[in-house]
Image (cartoon, rainbow, N blue to C red):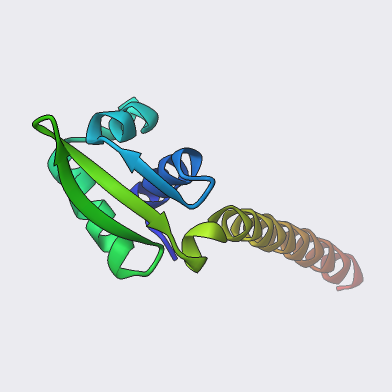
Length: 117
């Protein structure tokens, strides 16, 4: 299960690397991340390294004309990220629905018991 920050980075990486391999700069990735996250290049580097260790993608750092660049190759977990995110949302809504239904049933049972006794 990914944290919120990891999920934001994965969304940006997947948007840039749909074919499986891409060459991207940290500024391009930072531009795709939400502004409210207060991202820096150091925090981005840490999250990218963590996702690479979790086998979402292979990460290679290089320099092009003095600018740091990342070569990202999606692995199986990275290619399946949109499906996993959709399944997580579906499971979350199912659990919320069950919780609401259970609360309604408990309330109705309480009313029936109060009416009987």
